[in-house]
Every structure is written in C-alpha cells, then in structure tokens.
Image 1 (cartoon, rainbow, N blue to C red):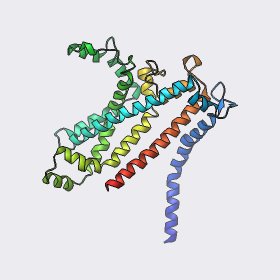
Image 2 (cartoon, one colour):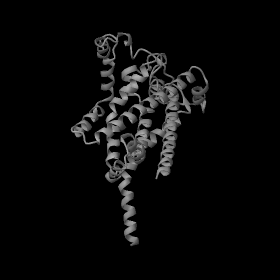
Image 3 (cartoon, rainbow, N blue to C red):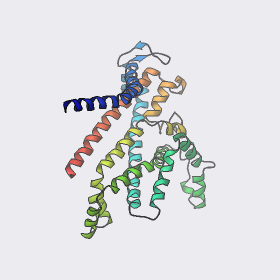
Image 4 (spheres, one colour):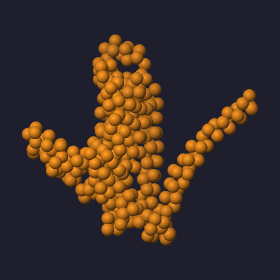
Length: 306
C-alpha cells in the first residue's frame, strides 16, 4: 500500500515537472528579473546604475511621472469597471436566454464566440474605421436615422474614447462570458428550477433566487479573468489610440504606460527600461493582490449562500 502511494506521488511529480519548468523559465524568471531591473536606471535595454527605490518614488510622487502613472491607474479602474459591467450583465442575460431552449440557441452560442477568435489588433483596426469621423459607418448610420446631433469624433473625444474602447473589448470577448454562464446554468439541477416554477416563481425571481446564487463561482471566475485581462491589456489601446493613449492620455492604461515607458524614445514619453520595469512590477503586484481579494470575496459569498 505504501509502495503504491509512493509511486503515485512520484507520478504526480513527473507529471507536473514539464509544466513547472516551462512556467519557471518563461514566467517566474522574467518576473523576478523585471523586479530586479526596477531598482536600476540607465540607457539601453539593460540599465546598470543602481538607484534603489528612486524609480518607485518618481512614479508615486514626482512630476510628470506621478501624473502619468495615476492617470493610467484611474483609467484602468474605469476601464475594468465598464468592461466588467458590459460582459457580466449582457453575457449573463444572453446566457439565460440561450438556455431557455430557443430554436437557434446552439448556433447563437457558436456565433457569439467568433469575435474571440479574431486578433485584437484586427478588431481594434476594424472599429477604428467604423468610428472614423470622416467615413465611419457609425456616423453614417446616425445621419440616416436623423441623429446628426449625436455625431462626434468618438475616438477623438476624451469623454467617449475610453467607453468606446471598453465596448470594443467587451464585444470581442463577449462569447467567453456566454460560454461560462451557459455552462454554469446548464449545470443547475432541472428539478430545482421546475420546483421553483411550480411554487409560482416568475422569470426574474428564478434568476435572482436560484440561478445567480448557483453560478456565483462562475461570476467570480469571469470577473477575475476580466480583471487580469484589463490590467495587462495593451494591444487594443495600441490599435485604437496608439501607445500614447490618445486623445490626451484619456485611454492610457497600465499596459500602454509600460510599453511607452520602457520602449519609446524620450520624445515620445520614454523613461527608460528601469522605470518600465517599475511600472511592470506595480502591475504584477496590483493584479496579484486584486485576484487574491476577489477570491476571498467570492469564496465568502459562496459560503454564506451554501
């Protein structure tokens, strides 16, 4: 018995060893090296002048570094909130409808996932054309509908640029939310739903008292995935607003700030690889802490409901 248990343990060790080696080489080592570089300054890709916590002090307290950093931070918070609302609410409602036995529900599930298979850069370029103030299809539709008063340079207005980018991201990954929520709803015991209907529960009562509590872990998974994706997002900003986060840094988030800081020339907002590593380290810490807090919150909610 003990011999079989020992073999099983060694089997598990050898089973996870390849993944552990790959993860260590391509994830853990670069993260640790980035943290190390954040304490250095200098020109080039490998800064060699040790400055301690000076890069972090600049980011948090020294102009203009702190202005750009806090602007990206609050933009990222707003970006995350908007994408979370779009994807969670609309994805959940669509999932509820698709699990009601609609005639084309299977086809609609597949159709909703198609945008997720597209390149983010392609999607960003496509919607940049759609919202172009000169020949964009969206403004043409508003003209046809007699809503000329609403026409504006959507990606050139500080008030609308970030919400538009958020909607584009939500549209592309809308299918992921639908898949998670439909899987969660399909796993609910049919007898429980049938008993609620017999007791007179309406559509919204069924959603609020049975479906939502039952799929709360799924809500947590979707929210955490959105959180990690949004706080490491770069390519959609680059495709739709350039690495400068135009207009006027109103769409600048951590991903674009890191890229500009580490790889751009000083004339285009570059601060050096050391400062870029400091931004990346702060991103990592924020994502790590944020995921931990979300896990604690959703686990406690799940415990109260169970």
